[in-house]
Length: 148
Image (cartoon, rainbow, N blue to C red):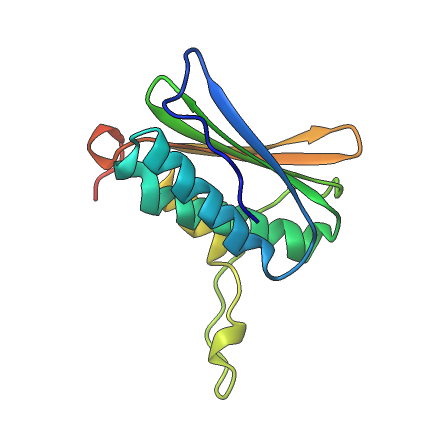
């Protein structure tokens, strides 16, 4: 799926929206959208963190929401804003990490929101009519308040 990204972003905010099905290919489509937006908007320092975060947000929506989802990518004041809306009213929560199970190393759960936490300066979830929006704010690493 190809989405035309305006170049460069207009202030105060440029926004791209995309509706995706609850399918395993949707995180990849969302990653490509973030790539195209970051390159068009000259936000290369936010490209990889943005791809990682949107991938986790969409994967969670596919797995836990199971409904069509809306992805929003916007640029405002030099920051990348990502949001994913799905039809589930269950808000995300950080899971305790469990020890890997022998023979099932890929079944370990609980890393997704830790990726979102590590690669964003802020994230959250907001209940909306007929679902929720999970959002994250990405800034260049040198302007983040966390230590790397």
